[in-house]
Image (cartoon, rainbow, N blue to C red; front, side, top):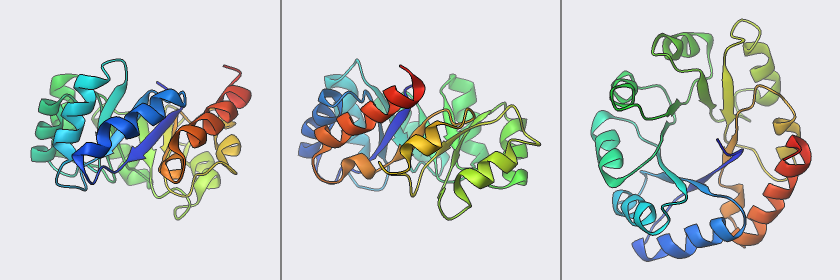
Length: 195
């Protein structure tokens, strides 16, 4: 898995190719296209077709119907803001990676019961950030986190330096010049993770 998972909101289908091209050119080959807009499913399908080398998934998936639509469109992974049993079951049946948002011990235990060990931690800054994740990995040493929310270029290195961080998600590289932001983020990843 890549260390950076951009949260991509596509409002117009015509934005899909230039947006993904900018990420790709900046060295990021993963995109979590959110199900927050009417064209999300079509954007995933277009992205999967035009950028087969990229790892394009669906984000903000909150129910079984959205999950099925995302997978039909070609999503290679599914991300939810919280934990959904229905989505977990669909992804498990189809052998698709599922990263649900889990921030409490109870949510983590439920995710573990579905065999999930890499979990989104959202919104990271609201729920205690790195300090909270370090505390949670005490009782749950098998868990890896994908913090999202409040992560940016100034604290990216700090998050990545914790060995229980599988990847970092966020929209921080999507604001302004996507390609330049992506290059800056990739540079930090390479320095911290010695890639």
